[in-house]
Image 1 (cartoon, rainbow, N blue to C red):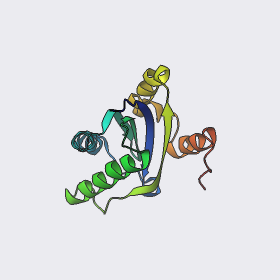
Image 2 (image 1 turned 120 degrees about the horizontal axis):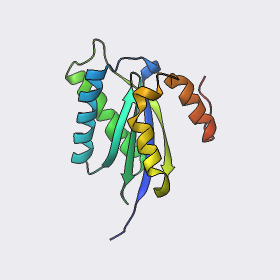
Image 3 (image 1 turned 90 degrees about the vertical axis):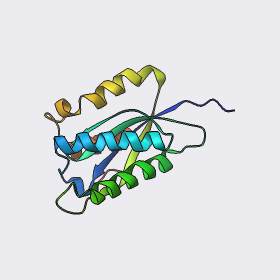
Length: 143
C-alpha cells in the first residue's frame, strides 16, 4: 500500500467573479462540500472563502489528482446549489481553478489564511488577489 501525503491549496471562483455567496449560503455550501468530500474519500482539512470564491486545503491520496478533486468538488456543489435553488439565478463556478502544493511546514499558515478570508477581503478584493496568485505561482495572468 502506498503512503502518500500531498497537500494542495485549491481556489476557485464564481463565474465572472459574481459576489453571490452570501454568508448564510456560504455556510450551507461549505457544509455540503465537506460532506461531499467525505463521501468521495477526499480529505478536506479546511474550507472558507468569501462572496465570490472558495479556498480548500486538501490532502491528496495516491489515486487522486488535483483535476479530479476539483471536478468532484466544484461540479457536484454547483449541481447541488442549483438543485436546491439556493441562488436566484442559475449558479456556475468559473471553469478554471488554481492549485498549489503546500509543504508540511506551511500548513498552519495556509490554514490561518484560509480561515481568515472575511477579514482578509476587507482589505483586498478577490480578483486582485487572484491575479497576484497567478503571477506569484507563474500562471498566466487573467485579463
